[in-house]
Length: 220
Ligand code: DX5
Ligand code: ZN
Image (cartoon, helix red, strand yellow):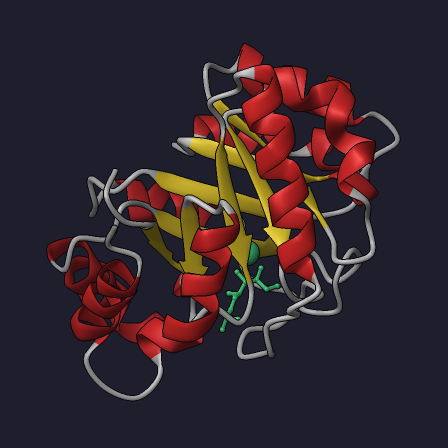
């Protein structure tokens, strides 16, 4: 593609008008919808579960990119797959068995994603990179929307992009946390191919203009 793919995070949407907020970003050219599942254990917050994925699936054609911030995600992979997830992301830190968790996702015919926290080295996921469709580099510590992008994560994106080139991998490299027009441009230059954006898209006015802006600043 000629510019970064944009995945609006509904964490910052208006839950009582969620259908409209989803339709808005779909019409504006969003590439997928980011669904943040938080269990109150892996991260302090509690958000939403498989019922939301099932409901969203009925009102949008956007691929549902489900980010599980959940301890022992293996317990829920099948349920989220059956609910209609198109991509399921599991946190490297949340399971003793990252390889098995990714296998479970693939066995459901769903795209598999591995996620690493800011404090986790990219080298730790090298053994599973041949299994994944997407790698998510957290650019904030997970748990809350509206935090500041951690610039030191750009090095990790570059390192991962290098590993991707060296091995001929085709997975997407996604960033999540603090994405705006400036940080997304930097991440894109470092090798990111998808930007998750919550508060930048949904806070204040005109989500459609925000999506257009992210595409514009990353147009080659
Ligand atoms: C944070 C979530 C993010 C969040 C990003 O734990 O994983 O997806 O929605 O929000 P912003 O874009 O506001 O940093
Ligand atoms: Zn997320």
